[in-house]
Length: 78
Image (tube, rainbow, N blue to C red):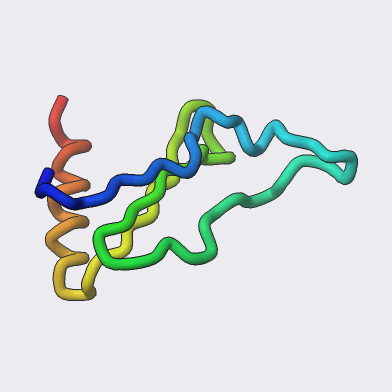
């Protein structure tokens, strides 16, 4: 990590957001509305599958294809 860079953690997928009920029912969806600058990412609990994760990434358009290729390649390793 470069000197002077700030890392901030604002939540965790282990908070079990989809099990939260304040009296009007459990949430149907949970996501970050604004994530901030390029290089920001989020990891949320995925409602549709036990133990699943929903990943959000903010990158420049030209870097998105490269990110997707590297990310998908990680799932091909057995």
